[in-house]
Image 1 (cartoon, rainbow, N blue to C red):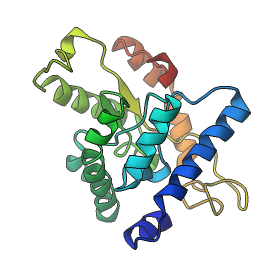
Image 2 (cartoon, rainbow, N blue to C red; image 1 turned 45 degrees about the vertical axis):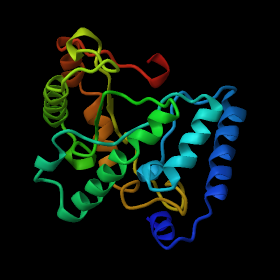
Image 3 (cartoon, one colour; image 1 turned 90 degrees about the horizontal axis):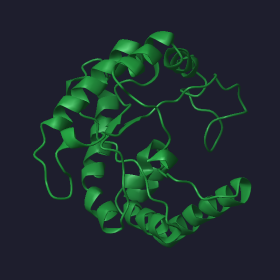
Length: 218
């Protein structure tokens, strides 16, 4: 959130942001021996004004094909999300809509559907995941086809399910930036992990002909 505040006050130098992004890509390559097939920003900062442009330039420069555009179908109807958090999500959604043209111009792609805001942490359950998927697919299939996007029924539909499985961090270890935050220290990380490995969910995938994959498989 400090990054967002600094940006709103005009305190960020985009050349420095670009330098940092490139340094992270270079370090990833140094540690793994290859470039990432996908890249996005923590707390969705990659779709913020100004940042979205340098982010897209870096991805195009390195040939990183995929990113995330966090616009979740049905989000507005999720009355279990606290108002303060919903305000943040809707701000992310607005920034995402304003980012689509920028990413498109730089040849960057993203999955057809994004899900994860409504199923995060304590709100994650097998039924919530499938409800979100069903809602998103219905909306996606209702869209009119275009030359760039053929009739959805005629091709595979890709979905990104954003998750945070893991174990609660114990300070001072863990977290992003200045140590672990409330979420990384909470039981919700473990709850997501336990939900995602449930046989019931795996069975749903098979029944619905859903194939789990990574971005490098797309």
